[in-house]
Image (cartoon, rainbow, N blue to C red; front, side):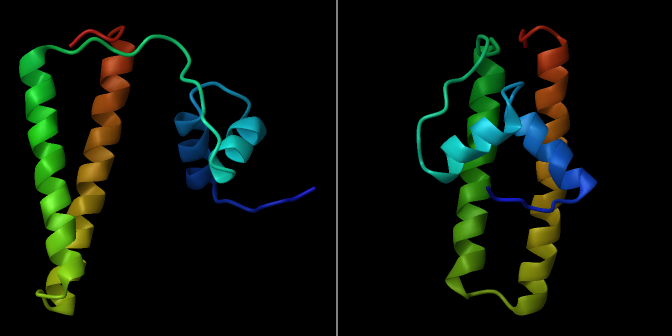
Length: 105
């Protein structure tokens, strides 16, 4: 038996990520590297929105690589990480909005 402590915010994020599955079972599968079956159908998004989101993802990956390369100062990295955290929050809100609209974009 393993007990872990998480903040209320972390607990909410874990519940969101497990997508309605039992949290303990989902965490075991994720932590042990086992496949986790998705529940429900994936949202249907318009092709232009998908292309836009893919471009955003590519830009974020490039930014992360640049930050990790050591070419930026510590202050620059802090600013970039703060911006990435803000983007993460916006993407979480976008995901929720898509789900609330029944998966159509």
